[in-house]
Image (tube, rainbow, N blue to C red; front, side, top):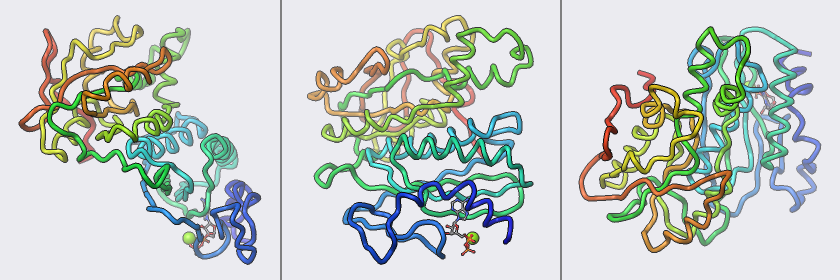
Length: 325
Ligand code: ADP
Ligand code: MG
């Protein structure tokens, strides 16, 4: 048998055991046909939402990163897109292009993927396995949580809406720069370890997003940097997002860093949610804030274009966020 099929059978067939046979047309599973045929068949009576993310070696991960951490980031970045839509992720496909057959890597990657599929109730229903430059593409498909609520579109922001942020920004970027600095190898402090974990294991804000559906929010997940991503809402809603730097939450582990303001504004890889909502929902949204996941009011939607930043000593950084080209 070709190695490719052995890889699929050994490492990526973990969702198959839950699936009924195609003929039985069971209504207990929405996967009518999973891995093994030419294509998968899923059953849905709702709108289907699809998001895809590609991780390229040298750009999104390095050889030094463990297979488990790579799997975590691949899943988290995709699920974060679903959070930003206010949607329910259900099915995934995985395209793996590997430079070589590394059993240890495949074991670590597939074990973490299986764990995350269980945690987030996802079925791995297909994919592709090829040899070549190291690239991982994950596609997630899902549905709205329920038929009545609309999605959290970037174009939903209205004049005078409040602007909110979940959690903290800048921590993952601080973690990444620690990983890149050579001095980190020994005696990693608790703080550094936590910052690094924010880069490796971002938490997609699916549950928060599910609770936001009734507030008709515009939302985006912060992957490229707070200001860069805020600009996407501004453009698509044809408004200006006015953010007050003094209202931005500063994580206590960042305060000692000289460049913490730049990290907060443009760091990226946070996978927190930036969202807008009418001020009449303010108390309800504040009530969603917890010690573990604070939700902070950081500005107002106003007439105009783009993002405006106010606050004493808060300025636009030179590089607003990661750009591929
Ligand atoms: P084809 O030759 O038609 O492209 P493949 O041989 O690539 O089919 O794949 C065989 C089956 O295994 C398909 O159901 C496909 O979706 C699945 N598959 C292939 N690679 C993966 C993977 N990395 N993860 C999950 N499923 C996979
Ligand atoms: Mg194929």
